Structures are given as C-alpha cells and as structure tokens.
Amino acid sequence: MPTRREVLAHSAAVAAALASAGLLPAHAQSQSKWNKAAFEAKSVDDVIKALGTARPVESKDVTLTAPDIAENGAVVPIAASTTLPGVKQIAFMVDKNPTTLAAVFEFTDAVETSVATRVKMAETSNVYAVALTADGKALFARKEVKVTLGGCGG
Image 1 (cartoon, rainbow, N blue to C red):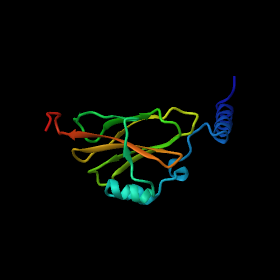
Image 2: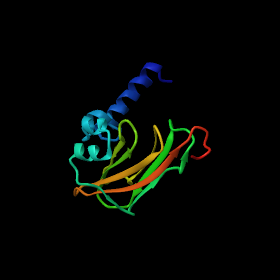
Image 3: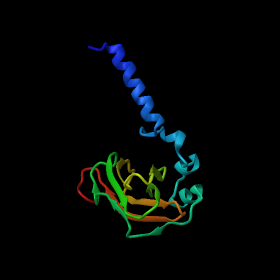
Image 4: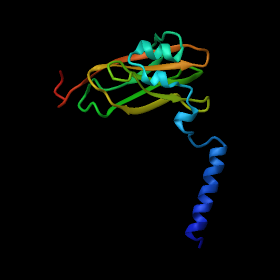
C-alpha cells in the first residue's frame, strides 16, 4: 500500500503533466486577453471602447438565458450559448452595475461555446451576452432582469 507521501508526489506529477498538456485551466488573469480598463469600465460603450472591438450587433444566433425576476441580486444565474463557428470569447455585461463587465470566458475550437455562471446585480438592468469571433465580429443577446428584495416583482 502506498504511503500518503507517495500518493501526494504521484498526484503532483499527474497535475503537472495535465497542466503542461493544456488540460488544466490556466490562471484567468495571467492568460486573459482582456485588459484591466475593460473590467473597470462603467458602461457598455466604455467596455466596447476598452476592448477595441467593433460595436456588437444583436443576433438570434446568441442565446442568453436569465431569469425575468431575480429574488436575490447577489446570485443571479445566467447562461449563454451559440452555434456560430469560430467563437473565441463570450462576455457577460450588466448595464447598471458599478463595473459593467461581469465575466469573460475564452474558448478553443475543441469545446462547445456554452457557459453558465452567476453574477451579482446591483439593480434591475439589461444583461448582455456578447460572442466575439476569431474574424472580429461581435454579436450579442440582451435581456432585462428585474432585481427584487423579496421576489414580488416590481
């Protein structure tokens, strides 16, 4: 039976091999193509300007799933997906948040471009899912999410 020390050493070796093969996620900050100014932007227009991308165009090819009413603005579940070829990133923006850019997910051609997360929302606002393609196109879907204290609507 292997000792605890041997198991730990073997686990570290396996993790190092997976990381070197690119099968473990890299640290988001160190690998991100997104700049600090984009995450500090205070509006959708400022995020677009900071990213240096073309103005996004609304598209039915990008699907955004979010609740109509969020009972707790601290944990609002959102998801986005697309079947468009060549999508390299999906970004979530919350229009009226203190920092508009909420999350960015990067994709390779080896994975399905579908992602779900939870964001914090300060108040009722439009939520955007923006898909950025390798050829420079920016396509988005938008949905208004009402944030309530007790889930009574508003």
